Length: 127
Image (tube, rainbow, N blue to C red):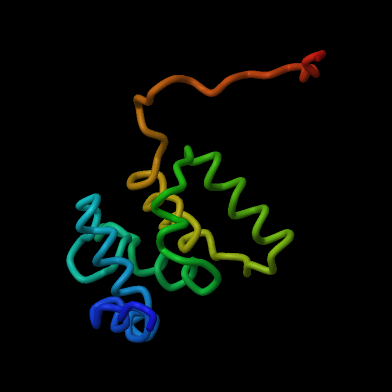
C-alpha cells in the first residue's frame, strides 16, 4: 500500500492554485518582507495604481519586483513592449507616472556581489 499524503500537502495542491496571486504574494512577503499594505508584491507608493493596472494585465507583479532598471532601462523596456508586444501607447502623464514609480522603487541596487562578467569572445576547451 502506498504511503498516505499528509492532508496539508493535498490542501496546498488543490486549494492554493485557486487562491492565485495572494497565496504567492503572502509566501514571498514572508521571505523578503516586500509586501506593502494589501497591494500584493508591488510597493505602495505614488504611481502604484497605474503600474498595477497596466503592467499586470500581461505579467505577474513578481516580474516587476525582480526586475531592476534605470529610468532609461525602464523606458527601453516599455518601448520594446509597445513595438513587439502590443502594449498601448501611454499619454505623457501616464508614462511619466509609470516611469517615476518604477525608477523610484525598482532601480538597480547600488551594491551587489560582483559586477557582471564582460565576455568578449567565447572559446572551446580542448580535450
